Length: 242
Length: 255
Image (cartoon, rainbow over all chains, first blue to last red; front, top):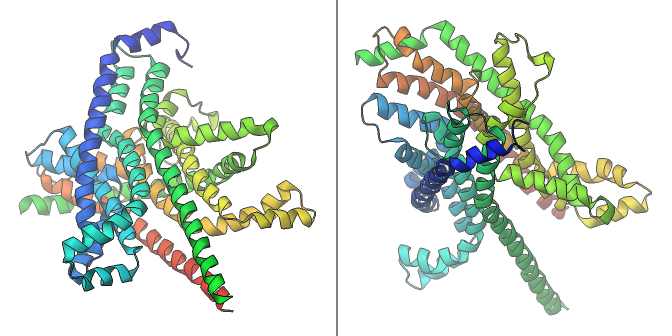
C-alpha cells in the first residue's frame, strides 16, 4: 500500500489541501446547479407525462427512454465535442451541469410521474368538480399528496447526481475526482495515492451518506405508516361487516 | 454537406465497424460478468447484513454494512482509479489475450474488478429488498420441518427473494452496461472508449484531413444507437416481467 501510513504522503496531501477544496467546491457547485436544472426538466416532463394530451405524453416518453437508455458519459462527450468542434465551447463545468441536468431530469421525470400516478383518480375528479384549474389542481391538491411519495427516490437521484459529477473527468474536468487524479499523477505532487484517494472518497461519503440514509429512513417510515393506515382501515371495515 | 458525406464514409469502412463491434462485445461481456459475480457476492453481503444479528457474529453484519454503504456512496470512477493502483493482477491476465496487448488486458482486469466491487454493493441492497419481502412465517415453517438455517436460506428464502427481484436485477444490468462506459476513462477496450478513439483519429478516415462536427454526430450517434438498442430491449423485458409479476397475485386471489 503505497504510503497509507507514510507521514510524507499525508503531509503532501495537507500541503495541497487547496486542490481538494477547489475540487470539492466545483463538485458541489456542479451538483447544485445540476439538481436545479434536473428538477426543472423533471417537473415539466413529469407533468407532461401525466397530462391527457397524447403528443405531450409521447414527447416525454421519447425523452425519458432515449436519455435513460444511453450512458451519461456518452451524452457528456457528445455535448462537449459537438460544441467544441463547432467552435461554441461552453467550458467544462457548464457542459457538465447541462448534461447532468438532462440525464437526471429524465429520472426525476419518472419519479414525479410515478408520484402523481399514485394519487387516486377521485382526487383529480374532486378537484375538477370544485372548479380548480389545471395549475390550482396540481399545486393545491395533487402535488402536496404526492410529495411524500416523490421525495425519497428524488433524494436518491440527488445522491446519484453527486456521484456522477465524476463524469467530468472524461472532458478534462475540474471536479473532485479529476483533481485528485491529476494530483496523484502530477509530476511534482505525484505518488501519494492512498491518502489522496482516501481523502476524496471520504469527502464524497460525508456528502452522500447522510442523504442516502435520509432517503432510506424516510421511505421505511412511509411504508410503516401506510401499513398502519391499511390496518386501521381494514379493522374498521371488519367491524362494519361484523 | 460535403462534411456529412465524408463523415458517413467513415461508416463504410468495415475495419472500423469490426473495431467498434468488438467494443460492444467487450461491454456486454464485462457487464454480464460484473452482474453475475455481483449477484453471488451481493447475496452473501445481503445475507450477512440481514441475518447476522447474534452478538457473537454481529461483526460480519457491521462489515457487510460498511462495505455496502461505502461503495454505494462513493463514485465508481474513484474505485476504478483505486483498483488501477492497488488491485493485484494475477499472472493469467498479464499476457496478450482477445486481441489486446498485455497492458490492456491488465487494465481491463483491474477496471473490471472495480466494476464488480461497485455493482455487488448495489445488488446487495436489491437482494436485501427481496429478502425483506419474504415473510417471517417462511422461516418458522422451515424450522418446524427440521431445516437448518443454511438449508432454509438456500431452499426456501433465497429462491423466493430472487423471484421477487428479477425485474430489478435486470434493470441493474442496464445500469451496469451504462456504468461500464466509465471504463472508457482508463482502458481502451469497450464501446465508449473505442468510439472516442475513432473520433480522435477521424481526420484519417473521412478524407477531409480534419475532424468536423459532423464526425462527432455520426460516430456518437452510432454509439447512442447501439447503447439504446441494447438497453431499450432489456428495459422492455423488465417492463413485461413487472406486468406479469403484478398480474400473478391477482389471479391467485381469484382462484
